[in-house]
Amino acid sequence: MEERKFEQLLLSVQKPGRYSGGEDGSIIKDKENKIRFAMCFPDTYEIGMSHLGVKILYSLLNSREDVWCERVYAPWIDFEEVMIKNNIPLFALESRDELKKFDIIGFSILYEMCFTNILNILKLSNIPLLSKERTSLSPLVVAGGPCTCNSEPMADFIDLFMIGEGEEVINELIDLYKESKKSNLSKEEFLIKAAKIEGIYVPSLYEAEYNENGTVKRYIPKNGAPKTVKKRIIKNMDESYYPKKFVVPYTEIVHDRAVEEIFRGCIRGCRFCQAGFIYRPVREKSIDTVLEQSKALCESTGYEEMSLLSLSTSDYSNIECMLEKLLEYTDKNQISLSLPSLRIDNFSKELVEKVSTVRKTGLTFAPEAGTQRLRNVINKNINEEEIFKACKTAFGQGYLNVKLYFMLGLPFETDEDIIGIAKLGEEILNLYYKNENRPKGKSPSITISVSCFIPKPFTPFQFHPQNTEAELIRKQELLVKSVKSKKINVKWHDSSTSFLEAIFAKGDRRLGKVILNAFNHGAKMDSWGECFNKEIWLNAFKEENINPDFYAYREIDYNEVLPWDVIDIGVKKEFLISENEKAKQALTTKNCKEKCSDCGALCYKSGICLNKRTKSNT
Image 1 (tube, helix red, strand yellow):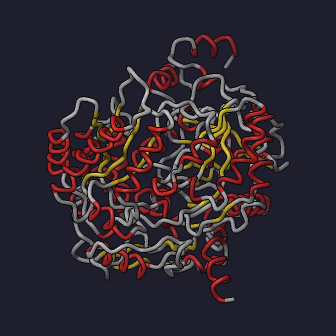
Image 2 (cartoon, one colour):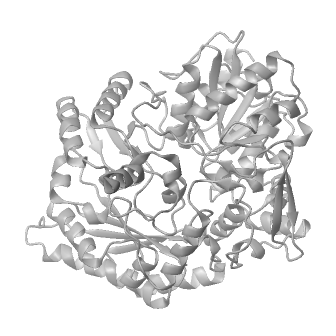
C-alpha cells in the first residue's frame, strides 16, 4: 500500500503510533536469504512493548545474520475495522509485510484470556487457524511463555511449544528449520525432528486418551517423541544474552523505561504462585553484570528511569551493595531507580533511603491473606509484626499511599480471614496517625486490591477447585462491608474472567473446540472489560457439550493424570502434594536460602539450590 494512503488510514484511529513502526532501535534488514521470524504478542502494542521477554528474543534473533525478526501486535478494534474494510492483512511493523510471507510466527502467551487474540491474528493474516490445516512447513506457528506449561487448550492451533526459557532453544529451533527448509523436509518430518530438541513440545505427536469420567487416562507419544518434555533454563545468567538496546516507542506504553533483570526464579514457594515454581531454580546475575547492562541500556535508549526486575527484588543476595554501586551511576546521571516486587519481611529503612530518588507516590505490599493462619496456609512466611514494621518504615520516609494486595477464594479460607483483610487495613491506617513526624495537613490512603484465587498448574494448590462466581461475589461484598474507614479504598478483579482463567489454566485439548467456537462468535480481546462477553463463552461450552464446571470447580485427586503431566518443569509432583498436605495443617516451608526443600529443581544443577547443597556438603 502506498505510504500516503496508509498514513491517512492511521489518522482515522486512536493511537496510530501502535501501527506506524519506525521507532528508534527497531531493526531493518535486507530480507533476502533470511529466515523471517514474526514475534507476535497477542495483545495491544502498549502492553506487548512493555514485555521484557519479547525484547530479549527480538534482539537475540536479530543478532543473527541469517534471521530477521519483526514485531506484530494485536490491533485494537478500530484499526481492525479499517484493515477489514480496506482489505489489509495484518502486517509486521518493520517491513509491513503480511504474516503469510514469514517462515515462523511466534507467539508469547502470558495470559489465558489472550487465546482468542492468537486466533484473530492468524485470521487477519489469512492463515488457517488449525495446525492440521497448515500442511506446508511455512508459516510455522510456534509459542512460548508461562501459559505453555499447560499447552493443551491451544494444542489444536499451535504447531509446537517452547517450554521454559527461550534464549537457547529458539536458536536451536531456527537452526533446525533452516536445515529442514534447505533439505525440503515436510512439516511432519520437521516436527518429528523438532520434538527431539529438549524443551520443545509438539502436541500432534501425542495422542490423548480419556477415562469415562472425563479425566485424562494417558498421553501416548508417537514417532519417537519423548514421554515428557523437560523445560529449558539458562543456567548462567551472566553468560545469557541481554540486549544493549531496546526499541524506544513514540507513543505511551505501560512500562516505558529501561529494565534490568537481576535474577530469575523465586526462593519463597508461595503455594498459590505458579511463577514461583515454574521458574525454579533461582539464578542471579553478578553485581558487575547488573551494572554493565544497566548502563548500556540507559545510554543507548536515553531513558531517565530504570527498573530492576525479578519476582522478588529485595531477595537479591547482595541487594544493598548492588544498589550502592548502581546509584552512583543513576544519581550522577539523574536517572530515577525503581524497585518493584519488594518483600515485606526484608523491607528496611536503609533500603528505602538508598532509593530516595524514587518519587514518593506510594508503595505496594502483598500480604495476600488477612490472618496469620491463612498466611501460613499459603506459605507466605510473613507475620503481622513484619507487615506493620514495613508500613511504619514507609510512613516514616514520607510515603502517604500504601497499596495492599490480597486474594479471595484461597483454599481453606473462612469469613474470618476476609474480615481480617479489613482489620489489617485499618490497623495500618492507624499506624500512620501514630507517626509523630507525619506531614501536617496531608491524609494517607490505603488501597486494598483483591484478586480471585485461580488454581494453577505446577503449584501445590493445583488440586483445589476455584470458588464459584456467586461465592466470590459474596466474599467481595463481605470485605467491602467490613471496611469502616473512607480512607481505605477496596478494588477487586472481575470474577467472570477468573472463571475462564481457571478453566483454561487447568484444561485439556478438548477445550480447543470451545475456544474456536467462541472466537467464531466474536470473542476477542477478552482481557479488556469493554470487549469481554461472558455469554459468548457460556454458549460455546453449551454448543460443544462441554461442562466448564468440570475444569474450574472440581477437586483433583492426587493420582489423577493431569493435562500438564506431559511437561516436566523440574519440580516433583510428590513435592507439590506434600506442600498441599502441609497447607491443610497451616504448616510453613522455609525458603530456598534457609533450607533446601528437595523440590526437584536441583536436577538443573545450577542456581541457589545447587550452591546451598554444595556448601552444606563441604
